[in-house]
Length: 328
Ligand SMILES: [Zn+2]
Ligand SMILES: [Zn+2]
Image (cartoon, rainbow, N blue to C red):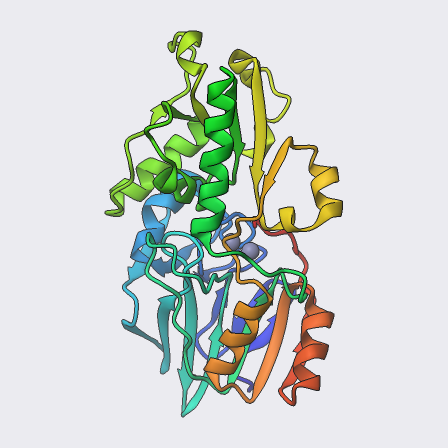
């Protein structure tokens, strides 16, 4: 019996009867992190990192959440599982699986840059590494986050000088909290969309000292929005809710912003190439540091990245998945 199988329900460990980030409802689910393409409703038992619990409760409801700390070993029918920092969003983990000396690591989504908020990514030695490759092309080459945050603050200051409200679109889990921490709050007030406030509360409950935030509710006088920055999920674009901030200028923080074609498609006034995923260099470095003999590539540019690794002399294979959309 192989230690790991790829099934229609997702990555399966038959010896322990557990799935990792299952696509469909199963009995035993190990969750790498709380983004919707990894953590779904309907499983019976969940095992995740402790900091994912307050997020999951808010996102998918109250289930039987069992949790572990980074590095803690959970033995399931003789298979040793442990969670290790992935640096992607709060509570995100790579899952290490060990049985009879054979070691696999399932990366989930990961970011190699230390963002100063999360426990930084740690490469884990293994025989087989299952890596994501959302940005697995050489053109994805992130600037250090300080540079991106100074671009964002300069943009906000410019808008505030002209009495325009700034709307910053960012995913509500991960990206929004990262932006919030590095905004220059001297420029003006910061407000957030309700879905982001919800995630901020989960971060605080998990022990992260986030800067204070106010929800941009209908109780706020519109005058207060003039020099403000509003953090909102991309889905709020063109909504009724957004009209209260007029006149406003929009920006979007996403790894796709480093790509000209996506910039036009996303129709935002300004783009900031800030991602919670590893860029090309980060993916390459992570793979090398695991020392893996075999690399399986899921999510994103799977064929391109697997081909590249094969050319580098690392045995690699692309594994297509059923659900291949990723908050970036
Ligand atoms: Zn994710
Ligand atoms: Zn993902």
